[in-house]
Image (tube, rainbow, N blue to C red; front, side, top):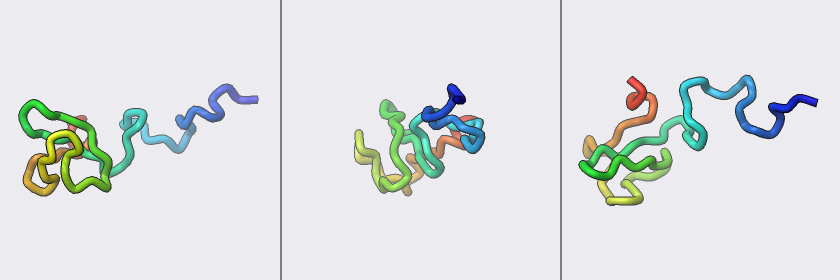
Length: 64
């Protein structure tokens, strides 16, 4: 039996993603916040900054 079973990091996992992150998730860039938010959220769950106001950065952009 393979030891990698059940850990969620199989051959289909994106190499650049962190555990717990999914495509479309974003980071609030409001000063002092920098919180991870799920893709479905339209505002930051921590500081309530709206996602579409330029206060959002996707994880993919954060890596670069």
